[in-house]
Length: 493
Image (cartoon, rainbow, N blue to C red; front, side, top):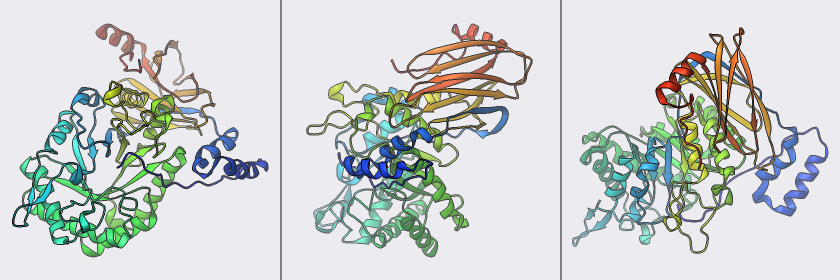
């Protein structure tokens, strides 16, 4: 993506018991402008929100803990960007996939020889893919934009002037990474925001998708290792795009392993609505029941925003990551590192600042690291999430942990959150509260009941982890590690 783009969002006004709210909403919206509707709505209805009352059944194991947040994206910041200086820090996030776009224009893969035949040069993109592999992740390649050698008038966001050549380009791209380089499970995504970059109609996009899919099928037939293929990577989740894509794929026997879209919104309801909508649409097409769901870019604002550099962004990131669990397979945080704009150097989307500013990790980076390191392998039932405080629960051996994010777009809401652990076995326990900012609290509790309740004091836009451990296990862990139980957390310095 280029260094500036507009978000495509919609807002709505909830019903409220306060009759003045609609009037205030309209008045404030006129004054401040419609681009801030999400924040305005939160400000006006905030007092009517529901506080959290977290209840965790430590024995109600739901299965393995999904980790959709273990996916990262890098956009079109620079055609010579490299992940290499950040490999060790990115590796600490345990990424599963790293997405790149601008593949054909940035890395100059496709050209013509003297006789006009297509030729391919992988020397610019191969080091970037090698960097991705060095983090432990797999490449997720957005097949964008159109190679100028086959584009109408050389325009990279236009259609191909020869769809047979386009099919060959897709085939050769997949064969290079999934056969010649032998990388298993690469994901290939058809285009990047087609409704924005090129302003593609659905019909034109489906035509491009059909040729891309045929190229993918031929690459698979030619001995490429297993890979996944999908799209459409639109700027938001649009019913018409998804329904027409599903119908077209079914009628033409094309490949569709995942459905992808982008979401930039401050209001977490926007994400939950996406999850509900896509599941409803897919329920009418049972042949796509195994299709994965990917948000291949997400954040609170598609434009540069100071929140990307602060605890606001950290709390938002943690809250959305929590809400993704059990709803989608992959959510790609946008993005890894800031670019360097002509005049704007702050409030950009990166987890790290630009190299000119020391490539320093931001609070959002530490939020991802925190939530991952404090989440155990088994997902546990959790009830009582509120309007501001979101949470997930997990088990790791005898320990049960709840990760909480108190996200408030207005930056004003604090909560003293009750957290109840049920179905406990034993009499003596240690409760450890750890916060993203480094604060910690340790309690030793003796009880004859099968449950314990503690309270977590959460300031606005804070992230915390609360762990209950049998005292004997906690003591043994402290002896083995030379530290207090569960204190080996990476928090923001």
